[in-house]
Image (cartoon, rainbow, N blue to C red):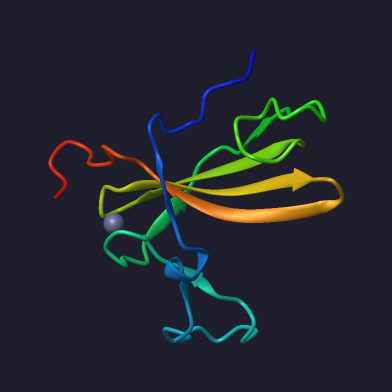
Length: 109
Ligand SMILES: [Zn+2]
């Protein structure tokens, strides 16, 4: 039995929608990029506890690939919930972003 996604009924967003290319005043290495909310572009995002969903090399992780899926949840100060997912499939790793269908917390708009 496959495990449920962290966000039930989530949809997809483009990876390019969550990467900020300006430095925002950052003084560290220029190849570090900030993340932003895929829905409202707010950059104040907090990571949650990662979860690995086992695919057992048999498509059991709940995504299109046959390997494990690493999910990193993010919660924005904007109130939106979303996830960065890394899925393993036959020697390659795919990265994608999921957003909740009902991702508004109480009081958020
Ligand atoms: Zn947001």
